[in-house]
Amino acid sequence: MPAKPKPMETVAQSVNGVFCVSGALEIYSADPVRMALLDYLTSTSQPIVDLQAVSACDPAGAQLLLAANAAAAAAGKTLRYQNIAAPVRDIWLRLGLPETLPAPSVP
Image 1 (cartoon, rainbow, N blue to C red):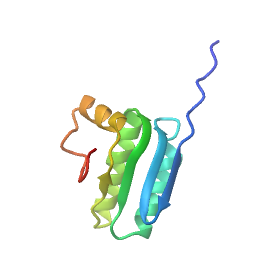
Image 2 (image 1 turned 90 degrees about the vertical axis):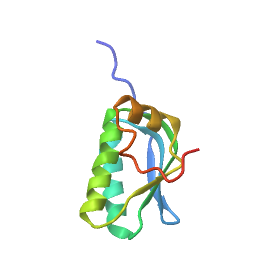
Image 3 (image 1 turned 60 degrees about the vertical axis):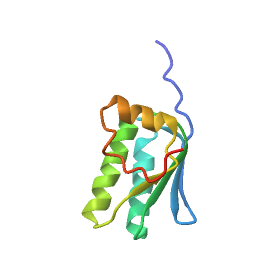
């Protein structure tokens, strides 16, 4: 039986009020990132997520971003994304969701 692929290390943390994600935003990392992101959403009035250092993104990562948008909206907040990395844009477009991801700045 082939060994399970080892998930890439993903770091998600608030830096100067901005929630930064680095590494893979995939099924293996989605739950810990989701929990950290939800904590961040409750602690700030103007949430910003920086996705510049995301090296890979799969549908679970895209679903996490959709859920974060919904959680922010339910709290009366607008979640903004900045520095959206190519892997995030690529999966977003492949899933047919180009209008859904608020993108104030795209490199």
